[in-house]
Length: 72
Image (cartoon, rainbow, N blue to C red; front, side):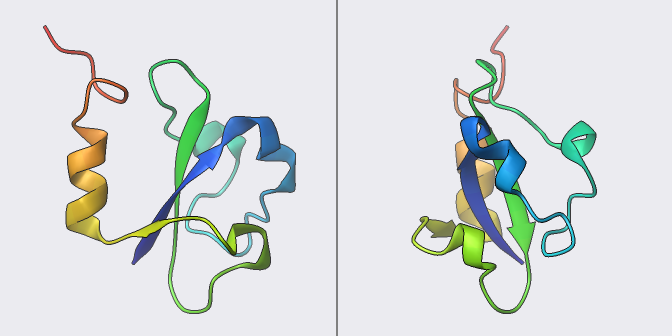
């Protein structure tokens, strides 16, 4: 699985047939709501070309950051 962080300002350009998420309703958002994480396998979808790609371990570290997870 390959992961990318995607700008929610471009959410209308997501082709949900090319990523694991099924709709805008299933996206996990950053705490400020400006970014989401998309995941895919195989070839990079054209709308994700040029974005930084992460493996599972790398995206987990990002998802545990203050930008994605509330700290008590």
